[in-house]
Image (cartoon, rainbow, N blue to C red; front, side):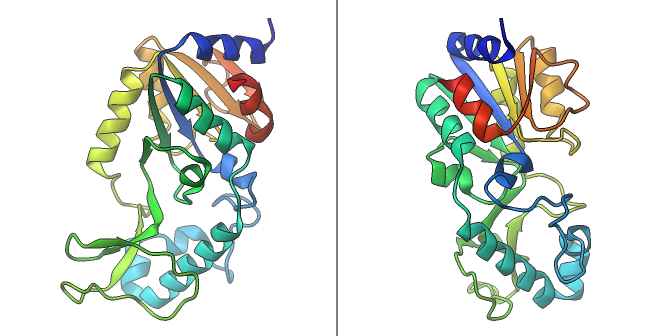
Length: 239
């Protein structure tokens, strides 16, 4: 039996499915990854801009970068991999999508039960109070200000050095622990704690299916490991 057939068989037999996605699936839609060759912006590395310290030092520079990123993301379209995951959600009685991506392409593909562990680039939230709003601005007009407390708003994403949103992460762990299968798509499995969900699934006795262009540290440990593009392989295993 081929790896694709085995993966298809595992998913078809499962009532409780979780999916973990990373930057690779969005890269297939033309969105540069942080670690890829297209990750630089004006000679700045993302690690220099996506931090609380960078925002405190120069919020205009940080916002200009995020608005530019929104523009790039807005031009991209969900690919066949995103759509296959949305189809899998429609079929599985119990389904949770856990994504490390902030771009919203899963939403646009039709996924609904999503846990965004690294936040959402289309949300602006207050740097002081609990205010937040959906924000589709793709032209930089200055640092937005909270209408409730006048503090600067910030992008609604998790920056380097920050903790993941507790409630979202707790939901993700519960979903993986209760699933029969974890499908891992387009992630290098190098970013923690998200990559630790693979260990959690294996310790819970779940089947694990990896779909990625390159091998990862988990490739030899998962139930099925498939090499290739998510947009090509996911439709085949969901079919």
